[in-house]
Image (cartoon, rainbow, N blue to C red; front, side, top):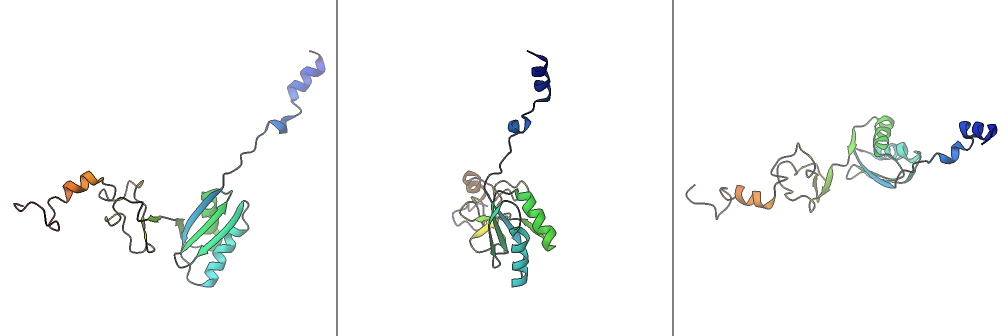
Length: 155
């Protein structure tokens, strides 16, 4: 190994070829943002349309929902909508009521939710325990309920 080989090895001239770029996966980001009029709808849509990596933007003002599809970071999309519109925004907190084991439990049921949706309480530790209860637990908690006609008459 000569002097030039050691110099080239020291400086490693082809450094860009070793660098691998991480490509973000295609994601669907759903955001809840209150929209009262067509102007609000247009403002929310324009806030994310110019973002790098966004391929599709869908606004549903009836449900107060913004859906962004693309190679984006969900937290950056949320921050951008919050910054550009000045509105209170949060990730879409609702799931179809079929997904939750007990959709009408106090922690899951939400009057503000769109029809057919309830709050996602499966992974939420702050939600009511009855909302996350198994059918075995529910069977024994309702055994002594006043609403159960087959409950124990001694109670």
